[in-house]
Length: 550
Image (cartoon, rainbow, N blue to C red; front, side):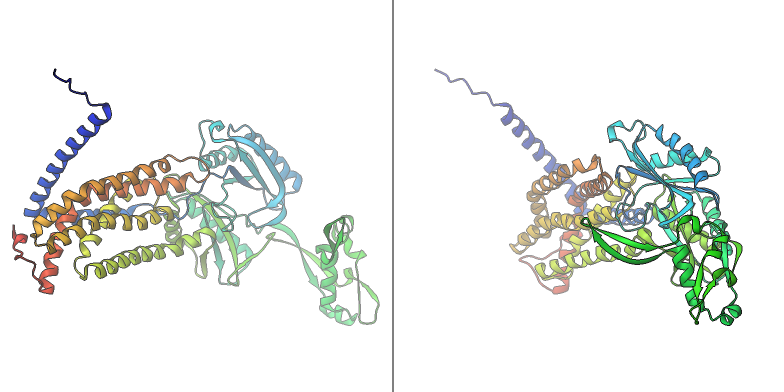
């Protein structure tokens, strides 16, 4: 009786076919390595080209710091002409609100008239609005908060007597009030505030001509109608009135003064001293304010003070002891904050008059200061890996077979982030530092085993072939498992989507290029640097090393 041969299951057939295909690929891989061993200039030239292209891509890729994440809010600032009443500002905000409410992405709108949240001041020509966005799936065609802000800025430009700019909150709280770039324009000449305002708007006008800048603006306005207090010091001395007492009295009546706190009903209440609104509404209210002289007599403030009509800003900002103006803005789509920073620096060198300078603030200052730090940390990581391998191999030459494979990963990182439109931000840079260790691990798998085979008496070529053959499967297995694990980050959505995509896409690209190119370059580098190590250290293996000429 002849037994019927048992048919293999699907799983067995699959793994059998996979192993046969992998073995065939391994044979072709080893054939390619033998070609590269005989023509080492091909591998070295390829590595030099990869390094040059990687360096060029690092220099030309748009730079950024922390991408603006979707926080579910869009806010806007409204500026009406200087001296506008609160009623006029309210009319403008109602017209703006009608446009915002019609936006499909709008979920809820909250508006505060009289608030300048850029300078944290209260003044009638300003207003602030906060738009809560709907869920991502309900926002319609435009879902990105930056695109929504740009679209609404264009739509509300039709509203007369109001300049309105839409923004997002900064990703990191505490670094400014809005996203984008921010800097202070300083007047180091100690000139008039009117000149400071004129130069600030002239500088903004020049920035708006740059292709990198979507818009730049400031809430500073030196044309607000005001009263300047002129004190007759001679008369005050004759009447025995202290100028300090006079100013403190006017401060209490007109500007308010903190007195104390008290606790009632389980809450703290602040006591402020100030004249009621009807007693400080016009200049005639000075007739009702008295100040005590050195004889205890009450002297009318109107006999010592004259009010002069002038124009000036609602608030004055000082930066590094200089009068300054805060300027905010956004880069155009397709440009990064790094591009905007370079545009500002170039424009400032061309148009700012003598005695004017600028100082970066907010998250822009952190972006600039972190640029050199990231390069230093990356270099420090390379040095750390080098000395660690030098101690392991007892050689200062052989670690270069591992270190020189890092450019193969850098090429993939910048190729992928450019392909997907991601700037070189802090998340990409963190991913690159992580890749240093991962790519070094792949190289170590080959180099370490090849070193052991060399010490066992194999020739350089045979040791490299044996190590590449046995380590190819674990290298591909661990690397592709890492890539698959990162794939969900590449299509992430929600509040931290841009950061996740930056890490995921950069790391996936770097790992793919590092593995595909590295498995060909690492064995060639091992042969070259092992030969140099033996020649420099004058250590001979069990046989001579003429293989380099093969």
